[in-house]
Length: 233
Image (cartoon, rainbow, N blue to C red; front, side):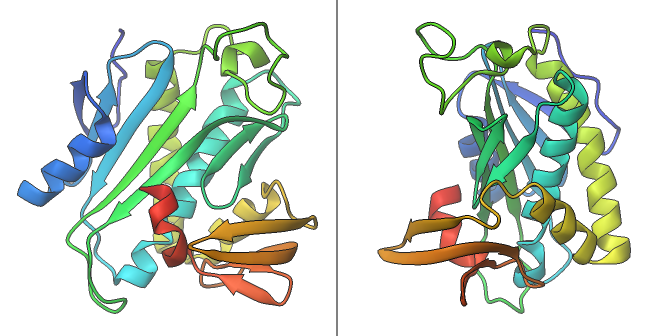
């Protein structure tokens, strides 16, 4: 597998195991801010990034949406033109309406006003697609099935790593509002009525989008990202 060429703020580790689990295990031993763990696979992009936050937990969680925007920008730049990249809350990544993977998040336990010692972001994207003929699973697809035939994990990792730094810098400089607006523009279910099952509760209503604190507004209710952490782990 070719290795990605990354900005100097990242340190790369390639693994044959689950990158997300490895990054969390590393966080429990010693936090290496910017450690990027990449799976040695050609058919799927599996990566995890270990970060050392410098802001309270409630604000650190919002970095997840900057991460999502970076994935969206990277895919939009590398996929054939006119294929929409959208997000299903909290973690789904869709291209032209088909699910191509998910995003992940884990954070150290602490109070909302405390600075967590570590945070891990993850990506799981199908590149080659599953078994069967293209089109047999219209709700799921690999990126190759959607026309990205020459896309490999290294190239996608390079693109995401650069876009993530851009979004992180913008988040730190301008706050959450620009992150929220771009994520909402890519919200797959925005304006649609859905039924969300989460943590033993059912939320029903039209999806409004993210509010200023990163919670998903559904009808008159709101679902904080904190409530979805089990879905993201």
